[in-house]
Length: 406
Image (cartoon, rainbow, N blue to C red):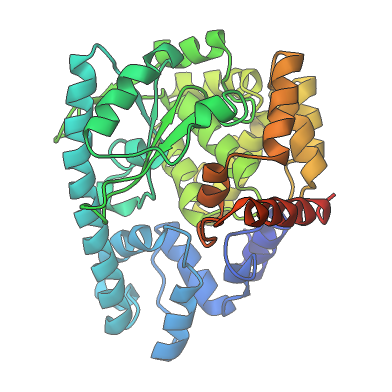
């Protein structure tokens, strides 16, 4: 039986390489140990009396969850607990308000998705909802528990033009053409919401799942063939099968955001593990290896278990029997998937996703001198350069910042 100090030490070890989001990184682990242990008890649904702390100390602890998309999860779980196991009323009220705000966001998203999916269906397109938009409406007991920053959909590449017509017709706009810039290394197009709907979420239209997870025809078709239908009350939708979704979410959290892992993403893995059937668990090792997510899936599930108790520790003992990862995954994991990974490591991984030499050259040129629209999208705090000299200075600033990471 691991005591409180042992649990916190386990979290520190897990997040040494993949730190939690926050400023500073892993700031959540620096919380008052008694409050952190109480947070763990809530996430594990193992009620415990709250520690006696001032309102300021409670608020300071909650502020460490900024950027983690986890407070609605915490609120929902706390409201199920008997009063003696809840924190002071002011803390509960703040969390309840965040849960209500999240519920309102879900309702707005429902209206957007219902319209979008109906219009795509009229064009003969059946996209797969991904990540938060799908998980909140399929594996969480209450959709308001899972906050999302955008809406992700996966379609086939030959459906992009028709999808763009539908999305732009709903008032969304593309800041620049992601597909023209780099169809293999950034296999998604961002669409920003209409100005008349400032509370709306951006859309991300994927034609592949990046960093090597599923960017070739066979693996993508496998995801579509194993997809499942979800009879959500507001609309019916399709999403990845649970085993595929778990491997993808672990891969996304660690390969795309390994230097700022959100607690909300870790909870996604826990809630996905809860709905996996015996058949899903049997399929998961092979799926993870096939999608270059063997290491990420194991690491993500260990994080989920340490924070939430799910999956059960007995599941973690079986990783030794999983197949070995592919050689390309080993290379990527060693060179890239760690906090502070150098620019050259990321570049090396991106290049082997591009099939043709000409494509590699075009990508490198685009990295050196990207379109102005891309620079402004990546760095929204920058103002549009008024002339070519200013644009050149902007590119020089980018090059110098990349050189510092070599």
